[in-house]
Length: 280
Image (cartoon, rainbow, N blue to C red):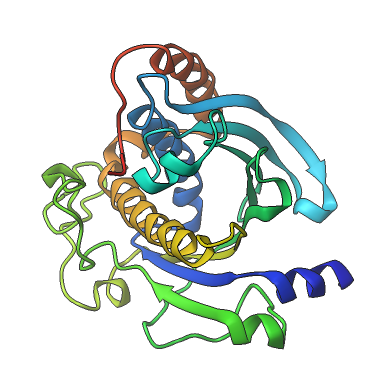
């Protein structure tokens, strides 16, 4: 509790994203893992992207018990804004991701070897089979302290109606146009589609962000949170619109896909052009 109290005092940004989806909690476990593997390939190429260092089972009570541990390195030279590239020392633009996935709970930590304790992102996620509303901001699943709640903002992400940038938009990944042949779900429509879908769940993702760099802290924190929202919106649109690709897969199928993805990423990172979300 003392460590948590200390973190809450120095944490610059505390934001909770709530993302309703027309899936069951059991379906999302497979959907998320499949989509992470596919999205990783879409973001890797030309010397940049994602390197998988470790992907193995773990059993640690403080990280939710038994689950899957992953350690990834994100090589980001062209995936940060130009003003950061100008200021950042050579080799400093890599992010380490360590994740403990004990679904339906998951904890993810991001760090940078150059900035050390001056930069980190801690994400705790709960996946719950319940409906949500835009106006509900109750302290539901993350049990935040009063001090943390005073800093927290809640951001409701709507995969159907939230605007997507023209550079990110793909018609085949638009929930308003997609129809699943396997499940019959979609297209999704209306401001309250999440209150009417037959299958439903919500991702509760709590981001705690610290970035200390004299003269740039506020600006970079704003850039980080803008990128987080863009990523979460695009990723979860894909999760739903890729349903015919992942529906019916087992966790054993997913582990085989992850093993192949690790090999594919090594090859992709060493060849071709920079791919995916690039910042100007």
